[in-house]
Length: 187
Image 1 (cartoon, rainbow, N blue to C red):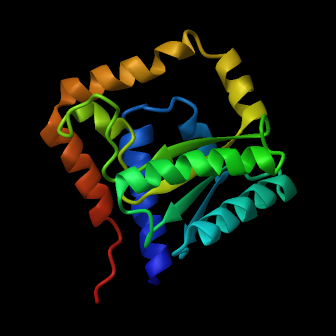
Image 2: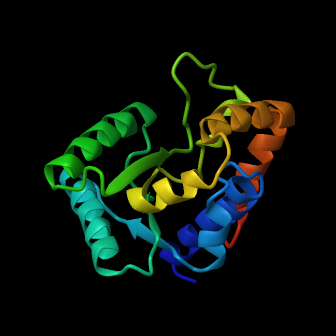
Image 3: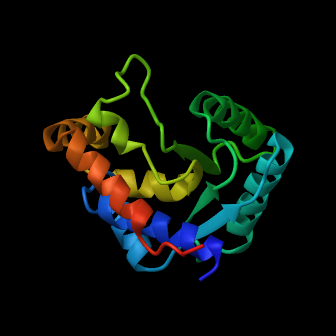
């Protein structure tokens, strides 16, 4: 198994156990089950390369309507959460400059994700914690369509926070740890 396969395996395990398993995103399961999620590992070490990889994934979505969404995984960069947040802001501006505003939406996940004004050990942070820093490119039209058929979509974030807090810090840490331990290669 290559290192990229390992990273993708861990990301898929997180998606299955946390995002789908806890229903944090009620729209993820059908897309995942249908094989419409593309997983791309980036080896970018600079901001410029991170943005180039992001644009390449937008182009991939432009050219392949069968791929519904992409998880761009930054295995070796963006480890510092505050730096990551700066890059997310830059990435959003970059996507707008490239004409993707209203076409693709970016969501972000990070191993150290911490909501503003939240304690670092708040289980709610695990609604956005992932094995690696990543950007999620979502087709706006698909999201709009999914939201039309979902009752009270505005409640999803609050429901996720309540569930994470109900499960508690140890359970949420354990789920993320399980994902990180999935399909590991040995050195």
